[in-house]
Every structure is written in C-alpha cells, then in structure tokens.
Image (tube, rainbow, N blue to C red):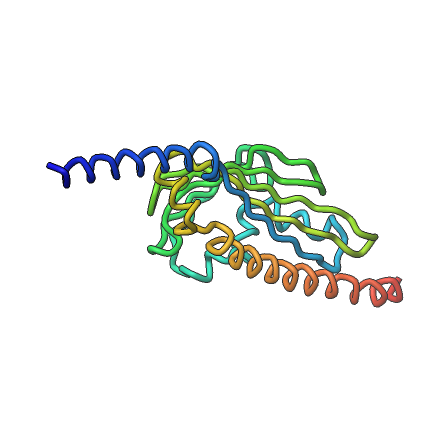
Length: 198
C-alpha cells in the first residue's frame, strides 16, 4: 500500500513539474535563420528566390533526394504559385505556397508538411542591398510547437530545429551564392565585348 502511495505521489509531483515546465519553460515556437552575402546586385538574386522552379537549382533537399517527385502550379514568381514534393524519408512530402512578394526585397511562403509528420511553418527570404554589387540574403523558417509532446521534445533538445535545419540552410545559401555569382560574372564579362562590338 505504501508503495502505491509513493508511486501515486511521485506521479503527481512529476505531472505538476511537467505542467510548470510546459507553462513557463517549454518553447512555444521555433525560428531558424541563416544569412549569406552574395557578390551580385539584388536584381540578379531576386529571380532565383522568387521562383519556386528556380529554387530547385540550389535547394539543399534536392541533393538529399535527386529523384524526388515535384509538381509546380501557378505563374512562376508570383503570389499563389505552389510547389508540391514527394520524396524519400529525409525530405518527406509537402507543399509550399508563395503568399507575398515584395520585388527585390522579400518572398514569404507557407509550408505544409505531410510526412514524416504533419505540420505547418512560415518561410521568409529577405534581400538587402549592401552596395550596388552586393546583396545580403536571409533565409528564415518559423513555426509553432502546438502539442505538449512537441514542446517537451524541444525543451529537452530531442528536437533541435537549429541543428536539424540550420546546416541545410547554410548549404542551400552557399549553393545560391555560387550559382548567382557565376551567372552574374558571365553576364558582366560579356558587356565590354558587346559594347566594343557596337
């Protein structure tokens, strides 16, 4: 009988502790941001982040599953355009929809994850002109930990969004930098020759 009382008391104390942790300490939301400077004008970068089709060229998740099924709908680079994917266990399946565009400044998207778990998140890419030939690109994803389990897993670092997503963002932005700078240098190298021909 004493053992049962002890177990009941322990369970009660544990329940109260978890309730207080959830109330005061557990993260209710998450946000991951990475930034990269690209040596090219804002206009050269914008087309690669505003078109869902073009993001495939630098998306880190395409590397994880080159055979991923992809479908695009809507006008490329415009609000309402969507991208649906269905891949392996690493990339899962889901949908991305562009919800707001400010030309040469930012692109906002809504993300719907179907597998390996259902969730929603907000994505934001912002562009800031550092000078005429340099652009700072920031890539952010944010969402809410809606369930008690999600909050506890985040609190005790079982789920660590920084560790899970941060390296992918860094890889993607590095590839975006290489892509845009290469493309921009080819464009600028042709200009003197074309001017001389005139």
